[in-house]
Image (cartoon, rainbow, N blue to C red; front, top):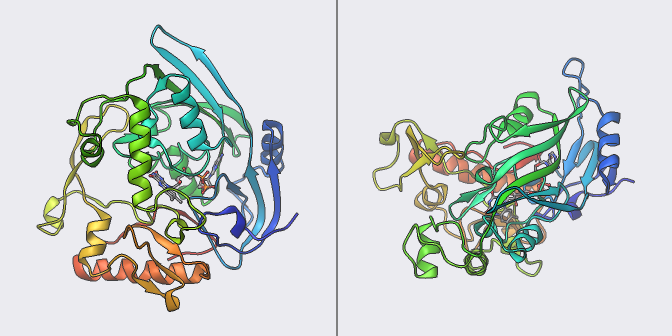
Length: 359
Ligand SMILES: Cc1cc2nc3c(=O)[nH]c(=O)nc-3n(C[C@H](O)[C@H](O)[C@H](O)COP(=O)(O)OP(=O)(O)OC[C@H]3O[C@@H](n4cnc5c(N)ncnc54)[C@H](O)[C@@H]3O)c2cc1C
């Protein structure tokens, strides 16, 4: 089956695939991976592409000249591991937000602040998905992968996953080799059997809930509040709202070693270890949205006769206004990166995975 990949991405962009397979069972996934074993010597130019929800992908207008596998496996299992904790394993193709709602419905808390994020469960450990003060790294116990280099299924512990801000060992392996070495088969989380949320850590969320930072509230309330905050920023998918035809935040928040490298008025945040929560000394994070706005790019800034623009609700999201090509989004991204670099000497790093295209 060959098909345009635009329909598989939230940008609504991307040309045809060489070949496309939808894997609905774990056996399908493993069979596809075995057929496409990875060898780092003599590796073919076009490697395979795994797609979950397509919400963190920018695929070229020319498409991807290789085999594409859409991860569509389903299933959730649960075991009570202590008086207070339940271990939950979800297959990679499960829809993330439905999974979050399901765990909360089962009386399990932990994932509530990660409500409303598009995509699949299997993609969450890759970039250590995070929002509103929580990252999946805090709750993941292990990830089951098919290692295409070793040709076998492996269980990777949270420590082995080496999570960082929007990164993990899985993502770093992909960046290092240029190929998807690890196919995520399932993800296991340890969640609390409690109606109460994790302590609220994000100022804007605390203010929306009318509580102090560090307080807990019913987890279902955090979910409702997060979804409402996200919607106001165009960060909940809505086919009728072009502000959501995006990959969410297009740039990561820059981290610098020397805070003096930052403009005097720019916001500064500590960088924390995703597993322990401890502050990492000598690292300061700033806001990419602040840099973009203060470099002169307002919400709605556009290129390509308006075909691609910054979201009208959030400067950090690059959006397809309906008729854009991938080239328009790249042109917009280059304008923003160039403008921020010229004004502040900071090079913004894109967050989505680029397929057959680059900045
Ligand atoms: C409106 C909107 C809001 C968003 N908000 C947030 C947010 O708050 N926080 C955040 O962190 N992200 C956010 N994102 C980005 C995105 O939703 C997440 O990164 C999500 O986890 C991507 O999941 P996906 O299944 O869509 O991955 P895809 O886009 O399909 O793939 C992303 C990458 O993961 C790889 N991949 C996917 N599945 C697998 C698998 N099973 N095994 C191996 N590799 C795989 C792909 O090859 C690709 O490299 C947002 C995106 C949108 C559109």
